[in-house]
Length: 277
Image (cartoon, rainbow, N blue to C red):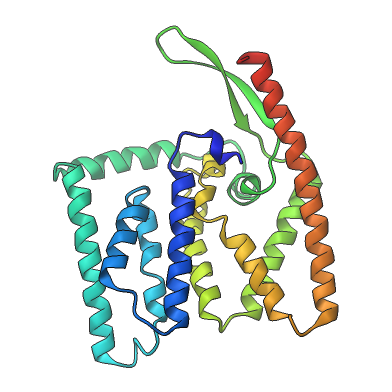
């Protein structure tokens, strides 16, 4: 809901990542290969929006049946990967007029700009913005901005959590996700989701790229949360008592999320009424 208010590519990234993961899951379930054309299309559509996400396109290939036990299958996998990477790199370079050094310089500038340490502790940025902020809205901070040409306006930013309850919410969801991963460790579909999630953890939490504004990057990874929760329920489909505990826990979390987010959205609309009516 918050993403829909931003003129960014993250909503499209969310759509394409979910579609590709679903498509890859169907192929893996049928023990079929993901063709080079599908890989190239996914690389262009997903990596073309955010270049770092192209890595996620090739994660399902690691779980194709017998790919590391048969040299022919491994060679076929590498060939399909090479074809799709070549298509992606060519289109990417064409878009840059083949000036790759300019891209590296600009990327370095962007990294310096969006990875500088913030006055907020790293753990709080991870809890309040990277993970929690894409599910449970925090409070907003209003700041005065201008466009360097004399036009002044009010800008709205998400603040860190100011109560202990949201942190409990975040910890509870993290526990459920880790529980799901441990319970379904041998499940290749769960492994794909976790590896994909780890890519974003490395980029944003370890390298700190855009960590202070990671609440707008949610389209890259937040879909993993409900999917892993679903796998947790699936893992205990034959355990009524544990299922009951899970239903109660998730219902409480969902109720709090709905109440909190409705309240925060009213604050957002109050801001619009006050400054942009």
